[in-house]
Image (cartoon, rainbow, N blue to C red; front, side, top):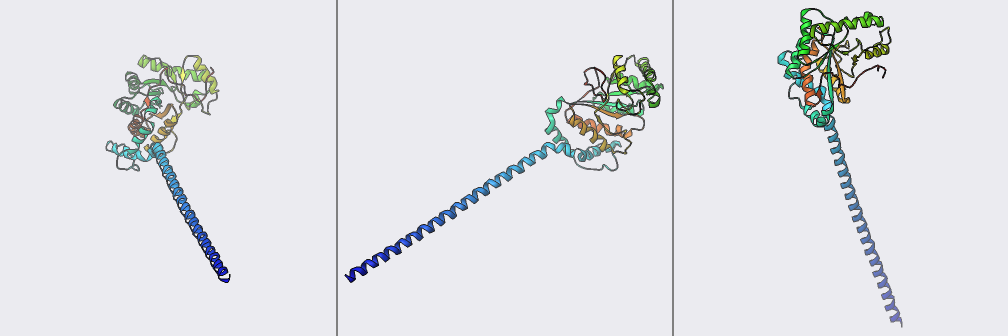
Length: 323
């Protein structure tokens, strides 16, 4: 009986030991599976994070490509100006080397979309010797523009009026005297001045100009006459007036470089489907002449339509005339 009891106790102890051992084995196995599961979770999470980061970088790179042209326009103008440097058209602070790489970015990013963009280059305050140079450049680049001229009765100026018409540009009026205090003294004084420039152009070219730009624009603050009243009056008489929504800044009074003048125009053109660009061809606007070839190259690479003002040009007016 005693021996039987001992044997029984051994069996129980042995079974208990085996049970404990089995439990330890199961616990160890569970731990291993848990560790392995955590490992794979961490690994998968790492892969997901890596893929997300890669996608983010790719998107950022694509965004850079899309805006590269606009961001780099000013920097890359140096190289284009350098290409024209042999013609004496380079600023001393615009020395650069290499090709104009940003232009291709502008064309790729905007390319076909810019075919709907219309750009009207306009020149105020001529004619002068710079008008002749600008006409030569426009002819070289097969481009038409609009000249808002003032009254000059010398033979050279008359020749410029005629050449503007003969070469397919739009001859428009910018007052005879360009004297603000005289023109805007009264409604009668305004129309007297306007009639004088109209008669001069008709007598010289045989063209009756109907396009007008108010000196200082309709938004000027010096007129003693209501600009809306003047705008209504010339509209009633069958004339069409234009202000601008893009400008080079060549009459800002600041000593802007050619690069800055070009950048000003391009930035404005980027945001408008129709851009009427204000520039000047007076005798002191040398930089406007020098930057014009580069500006034309830029605009042509952007694939915009460069046109002279005509009856189909959308009205760009700071102060609207009555309907």
